[in-house]
Amino acid sequence: MVDFIKAAKEIEADVIRWRRDFHKHPELSFEEVRTAGIIAQHLESLGIETQTGIGKTGVIGTLHGKGEGPTIMLRFDIDALPIQEEADVEFASVYEGKLHGCGHDGHAAVGMGVASVLAKNTDAFCGTVKLFFQPAEEVASGAQAMVDDGALEPMPDMCFGLHVHSRTPIGEIKIEPGPVLSAADMFKFTIFGKGGHGAEPHDTIDPIVIAAQIITNLQTIVSRNVDPLDMAVVSIGSIHAGDAPNVIPDSCEVSGNIRTYYPETREKVHRRVQEIVAGVAKSNGARSKFEMIYGVPATVNDPELTAEVISLLEKLVGADRIGLDEKSTPSEDMSIFMQKVPGVYFVIGAGGEDYPPHHNPKFNWDDSVLALGVGIMVEIVAHFSGKCSVD
Image (cartoon, rainbow, N blue to C red; front, side, top):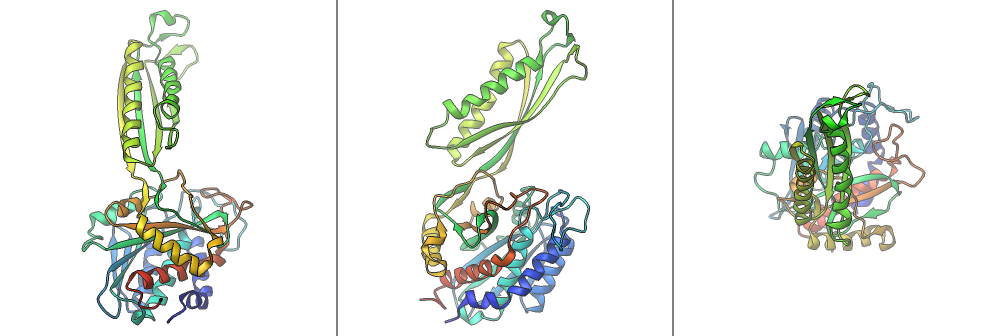
């Protein structure tokens, strides 16, 4: 029986080196040409069947085990953010305005480490393993782009993904069944009133005042329309109207975002936002134009698979290192895959409260956790492929 945690530790220096190279050379969504090239070259050097250009800049590596078994998909996102780095690290970004500010450099490196360990131990698992190196998670488009390019044909039996987290203590795992990350949608609306002189408001229909009423009323959706035991977020991100302080403009444009866990709540919040916009505008004698922009659905862990992963993790890291009931309101486009393939998504702690948050110019984390990520992902493969290497 292979100890994959130990095997991962043996290549830790390589995994850290890969991560730091990716960090130094970040590439934005759908621009991950160098990153994808390094990944593909590594997979090919291991004798792994490699597909490139999936979802524009995605890479898929396929390995076959010693016998019949399920097809297991492991997903690793690889893109960076348009942020100027301010972290004081020796491997800081060399590209102006680009930063691996969410840990995807580490995910890509973990995937390469998983490939290295699995390629040397194909007799330790059954079935097929597909390694998805996904572009453009930060713009929530890469997963769908890979699906559109046939990445899920034939359909895997299950999928797994991980995410390092800078504010969680090193080596702690956050995991739970059901929704773990929210759906993310945006909306835009324009109020068309009647402009005029700021000193003569009685001759106008002020779109700014109407928009202000709408924005205030939208805050009642969460407090009065959503079950208190459920979750929803409705936030306004931008308001644009007028150019002069003494002129009431003809129109006002507003945009915001919605976060929810459950489909029925998502539908209810969408409906109420539209009703409030249309109703308040009409009651004030104005017209309105509304657009809902659907983003990604909630990331929902399969209960049965998650229970098995938790049991496996308890053996690998100990029950005291596992945090349950760990929902979060950010979103993740791995949900696109997980709508079609049952799966599990979990977080590995890579820092603590003193570390900067994700998407911050000073973002940093402890990459000594990468070997653990490699080991866990390979152990998951061995476990779900038919328990070829674990009891």
